[in-house]
Length: 366
Ligand code: DP6
Image (tube, rainbow, N blue to C red; front, side, top):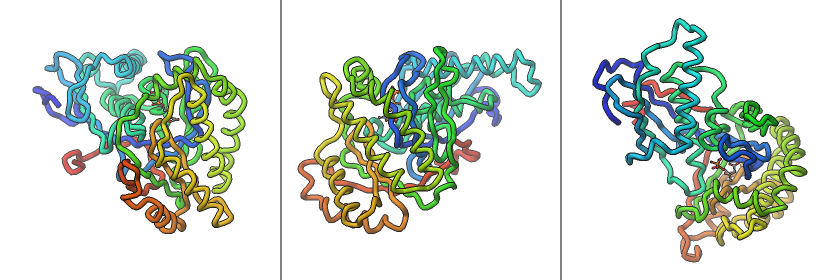
């Protein structure tokens, strides 16, 4: 990141981190591409940032000639429309704050250009929602730099839909909203991360290959061609949002798990109903699905749930006391050599975690 040549005081350089989230009721399909307004509400769990996160540093300086951005060490095009949307909206809020006459507001920073440097500590585009953590972190960090507080999920949403849910910790819903201007399409915390301390989230990485079709274009084709998606958005998800919220509030694992699996399956069914069809699941994903069902059947109760985003990696929800037994089952059924040409499965265990935060001592952090 470019080093500001004028005063390096703390106010013009800020580093923050933001978490990944995993949807248990999936977002798939937009009603407005530019504002990123979804055709259905969704609900997710925010992962703890001890392992997966995006870290973003934003510096402002009088000496910077233009806005610039580096992602994972490589300079990218700052004119990307979604990055521009976030920058524009943050600056708009900052101007509003100035015109509202907030005395604590730093008048100079508004005219300054920004240098943004963002790193993920996990593979981009491997189905692990890097854009969600990335845009959440961008918006949160810019807001810190410009001294903006309050509701920011509506801006993160304009970077990437799922990013609005990474603005909060714990269990988070993205309410689709009704308005054409998107003002009511916001994320909201359902329960904090402390609500269900026994819940664990396992990420089973079956393949780190780039996904064949990105979610943005995949969901566009689905909206255009899948009548199952229309049915899902209008007649299935509204009821599931209510049931899922209640299952989370009651900490009813079986209800939570069944809804999670059914919703993942229906999302992938809409992908298959898309024309031409989209396949995100591979052989290993399908084997994980049958392993979970066999495991649950063996115990006569729903102890584990899978969910898959726009990629082949499985995310498993399970209670803490069943983790060792389940991991053993995975290791038994997926010894490296039986993995049919795919990468072997590696397993990472997470808890639910908090939303974005400021890194007070970036040197220590790195
Ligand atoms: C399958 O948020 O990546 O992960 O809004 O076009 O950036 P854009 O899409 P994105 O879509 C995520 C889709 C999903 C489901 C989910 O996270 O809800």
